[in-house]
Length: 266
Length: 266
Image 1: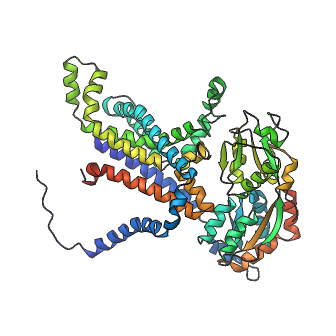
Image 2: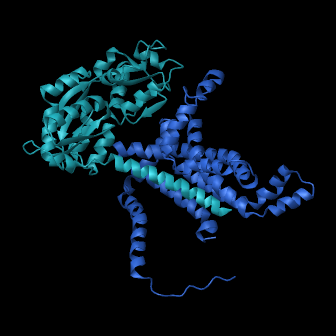
Image 3: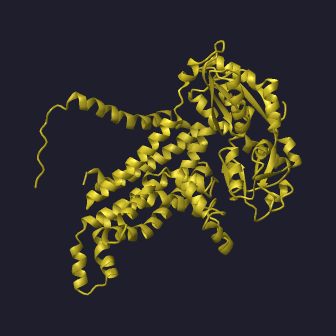
């Protein structure tokens, strides 16, 4: 089962050149960000309360959106992986749709359904006085909408890879299906859930289109880091670069945290 | 099992790609086709105009008139928040003409030597946009500060937001909006959708959307009048077209259209 040792030969030029171009294409913009960063001015740029407000809001919302995705997404993944029902393939396609849907379309759709005049939003407003747009909960919903599919796909894959016979064994020993899920399945697929959570969290952190469309833009309530970067770019590019550096640092931290899990290629 | 997952993902991706491709091909007008039928002296090709969002209706009409006056010329518009437009011009966007909603945003462009000698061609004042029939009986600026009102303003980076700050200061009204929009049309749409109760927009925007929106004038608006400058850009790909369009916007013919839209003469 040991993998064949790669034979060391010169990579053909026709592959090497586009490969290096591709590498440069992905890395150079980030290098540019570092070169153009207003390093001397950076402490002043990054210590303004607005930056911390936006960063705090981003971290809180991304974490809440991941939590919501876990709460709803893991059972959804289980449903897709472990049960048979008519139209299951169609349901899976629907679940993956937000992956490829432009987030701004998601924002428009959310606004039409959950906005103050939306199909459900109207009822939420009149019955409970709850309006989701322009509120931090709106940001969480918008982020969960775009991030949850990442978690569902990841967890579903883990479920399919996990041997169902362990669950069957638990069932023959008298465990209910729910107990088997809690005590056997969840520990089995924990790595998949962790990986899916990180993916969803990172996606939520970078969410822009659905957030600005559905939740609006106000510092401290709905203005997350990507929105702050976008608006700063219009008036104060240095501030936008500084904010981008913060997001870049967070992204690198996420990758570093995943190093053991993914960077090794397993 | 994982093959079906992959196939679904592939199908969805293919669908999304196809949608994107058709969208691209349908929007690719060929300027060469237009210029080949040119009969005017030397004007031909496409004139690309970056204009403030509040100019959308009047400039679209003026663009058509300009195309009629100069057969063979196509006018293409990019409407948006003046600050974002100014930023993209400074960053090298291939535009011929810039029409801004404030001298401050035009200054971004002239400071970068991307244009010289801008001319003010109209002025615009703010008004309170409310849903048709003014269901919440808003009569003055100070009403908006009352509890229970949701108000959208433009972000202070864009001209309508800067004017709103000036007007609110003049009226000594302390107002916390629920969202800060990227351009004036965004603030107007939030009223149209019923997501907010009012927003501060230009008089011209209310006139353009009279079927769904009512305007409530307030005296402090006189202290926040915005001058609209226009300039042909230094690096205009179509310099002759840029000069002709800029001159046309300042003509008596164009003035009639702009006045009918609610703009004031400078």
